[in-house]
Image (cartoon, rainbow, N blue to C red; front, side, top):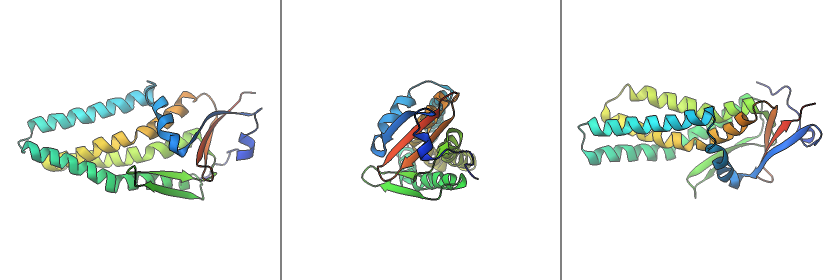
Length: 210
């Protein structure tokens, strides 16, 4: 799928037509995300309620299951480990797939083993705000749906493992929801964003009226 009406980077930098609303280095992403994470818009209310619901279900299962308490904690812990080892890479490659779906040519997934995390970059690819939200939230939708479906198919022991994975993965989606919230807060404007791999910087612009 092409980004047919996307302006190029040079056009975005024309002050008379576009306004820079956010600019931050890749290393600052977490700091910037926090600013949008706590602004209680509809997307963020949904995100926080989802976290509360998952934790509540996990606590309920811990309390009602006849499995030994230490085994319950170990199953949840294994779910956490599964998220770090398997789900984080899968999550980032879903981002990469979505960037390519919207027409990006140069897409890379970079792993930060020191921080036990990873991120996906589509270098110099200008993407609309709406499409960017799709890129951000597709991993959450796909992985959450898959884990919830499996929870209904297995016994308590496996459910605790899956809930552990779901808790940590949902928490790890906070940055995706925060950046989606940035777009939501500017939803009445024509928003565009791109990453510059050379300077490791992300840019967000909105079109000025007129």
